[in-house]
Length: 426
Image (cartoon, rainbow, N blue to C red; front, side, top):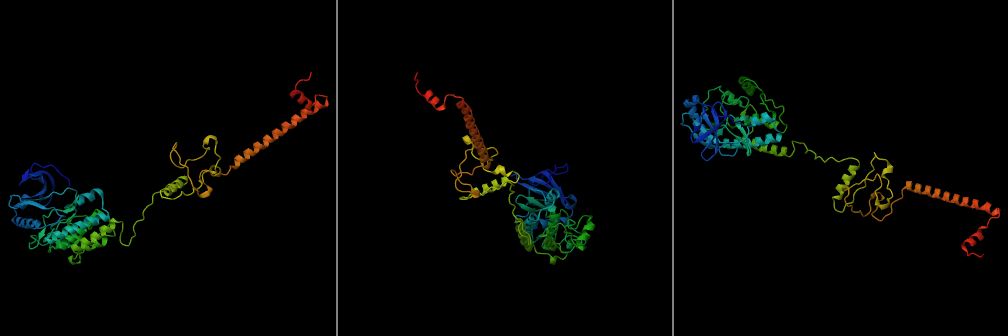
């Protein structure tokens, strides 16, 4: 609720309350923020001077204050004190912190179906307590509903009507706010609890659409639409539209009772809070997005390893990498990791625990022989063939060099060997 500084003409003390700020002004007077000696804060309304001189108004005001004292319930602002004999009559109610429904919708936009139904259920329950006390509010609208941390509160019973009191209004004179008045109020007929039900239906439509169900315009245009035209409920959620339409019936007898309205709104609020509506299944639960490719395999393996006694699933080959890269390679001396190998778990440099047991795809635990790499086998075969050829060529060359020496009378090879290895004979 917006607070303003006190003006020069505003009083500083009323009764036993000290005034601090202006909370607003209306047709009956000005509302102030005040506090008593104990520090209790109140919303104190002081009646306008011209109305204070009207004895008829004073009589009605006295009856309304008396009726407000009878209201019990947590959905209204409790009456704290009043002075009906002062030069300017005043009354103080419990101060309710929080914005009005009008301000919240105006600043943040329309409410959801669950929020609207929840607020409507609390308001209907509050109206039930008001009607049980024999009082009709007659001016229920978004600006007279405060959204406190403990729930919505109905305020401003300034033009409320009590059972047994005359209306004190002339026929054809509407008392209230255009767009939220019931047709019987516009005609000047008697008001009943159904009058507040109509206003609550218009308030719920406003909470859902940020506009009156009878549009905008001058007071005369708005009052004509209330009596003769159907409400515009485009934008009202499907879960609430039938109930709101029933509340806005032209004939008071066709509107639901306050108790029926309270029970129905509680049911809608509970269903909408669970993400359900009439005949609609609950919204599917979204699974967390899973990565693709190699990370998808790691993700599946991690989820499997969280379960006791489970074995990790096989990892699929990545289509973006050649088949040669995924083939097992022979271990290098010293335990070096083959080039192109990929770590699939833990952090770099961390100790690794060998895996045991068989795994899909033909892999086994430690100690099992891995299949040889064909490329390595080809390299070994080529080396073997080359070495064999070189050895054969060396032997053949050695034999070719020894053959001519024997034919020219050189020292025979066998005696030479004996002479070299044996002792000299002289």
